[in-house]
Image (cartoon, rainbow, N blue to C red; front, top):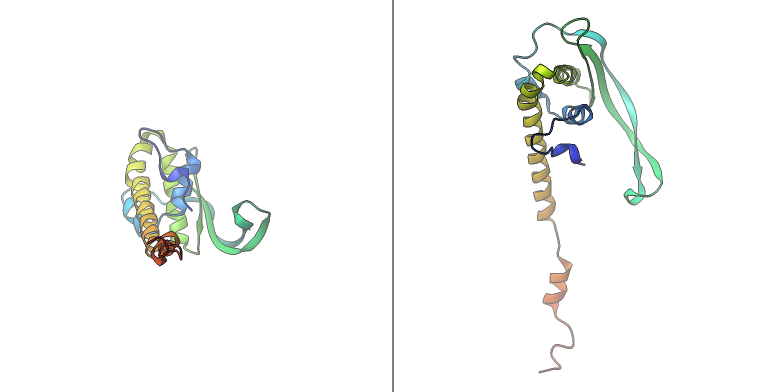
Length: 166
């Protein structure tokens, strides 16, 4: 579920595919808070948010033949923040939330500006990384609580030969 882009090294700038992947999984309240003072002029829409379906593929055992698993709902949009000549922000987010797609595209456009990249990285991407790390830790804790150690169970049961040596 989590990839190498979830854990960037120190002093390493985040490349665009990595920050777009983070923005696609950022929850709406976090984006709203982080971009509250960044969204000055209204964006120029190149493609307003639209919702559609994507086919999701899986692999048997993670390495076998691909097969169609099912469809998921995805919302996408493209916009320009600033004016002509400014960067184009694009986003694809899972679900039907048009506002989340818009904010992710705004963040993408702002991150492409070298003068603002560091500040946006600190205010938007870093909280998203922390949120995703917390989610991963909670999921691991839930999975750990259901773990069964069969080796311990077998050891506690004892073997039939234990009583014969005494």
